Image 1: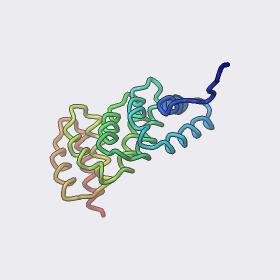
Image 2 (image 1 turned 90 degrees about the horizontal axis):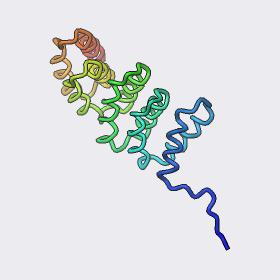
Image 3 (image 1 turned 135 degrees about the vertical axis):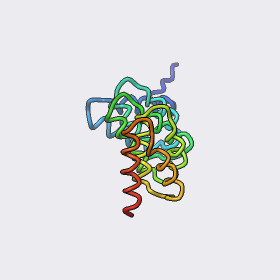
Length: 169
């Protein structure tokens, strides 16, 4: 007498299946996977962070968005998104920058630290995100002022823009 267990995937297997589906060519499959990962929530975070290193830029960008939507634990998600600001794919970098802005003030301490990253691309996107978040201004403004003379001219330019954006408020 044999007993079969059909559909008995572990949570880890379900998470991995849905993460793989984030890179599917079919938008319906991607949408379903994103919905399921959102339903799973925080337990999916470690696997989503691992997915940021996947070879498929579409999957990486989807993982970025899902991480920002889940939002917790901030101490794991924000540093992973900041590292993604240096991704080889511009759409992934832009998604990470926008996701950090969406996360808002909880991301600020991590972003201020990232202004000193060795990677100019990370510094540039970090300055942009800080300018969009804008609060707490008393912490962000001095950090951006220190970047005005960054060795990469574009980081200084984006820092000026970020300061102007904060000042406009």
